[in-house]
Length: 119
Image (cartoon, rainbow, N blue to C red; front, side):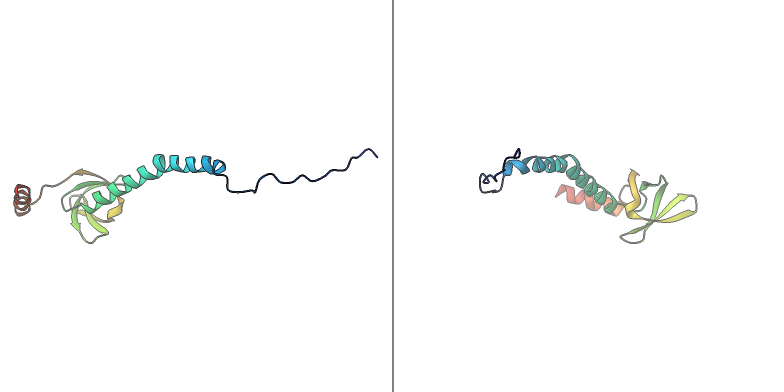
């Protein structure tokens, strides 16, 4: 007949682990880590520190664009913001996007910080 018989070939090698096949995937993960993940983690850490340092009298901007002065820190998660004369709004701390102006410590706090810096 015209069709010749096909014979199976034996497999070459043992089919072991080939690092060179996974090297591009590993390289892509490393690039993503240093270009995307790590900077985002640093940014989140800075935001947490900024939110943790908020105190009464600080002028802040919220993620929605609202600008106000912190009238009272009610808890670890809530603030009372004065947006206009006599207009106060409750807001969550994590929604603060930026601090425009920090207040100076009160007189007794300022003396304590000066004493610590001299020591």
